[in-house]
Image (cartoon, rainbow, N blue to C red; front, side, top):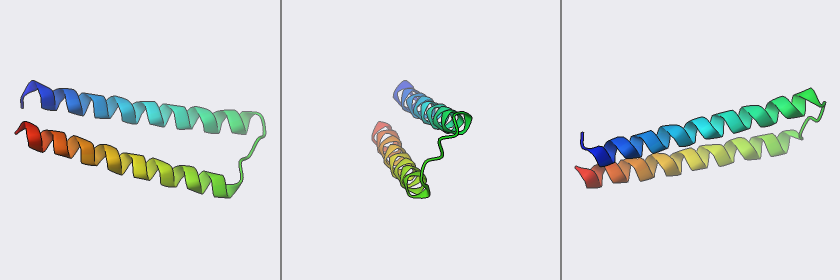
Length: 68
């Protein structure tokens, strides 16, 4: 593997970790203060996370293919 592929994978992993920790922090804060968001907004947020994950995977795959 050359360095550009390694850097792309590293950036992808860091982005995933940032999103996981931020979503965990939001759910912790809402639970701690008794603020339960409506289920529609929870489902919308999960759908948005799935779309972002797909976009990131597609971008990483394209970068890996172009680097080969």
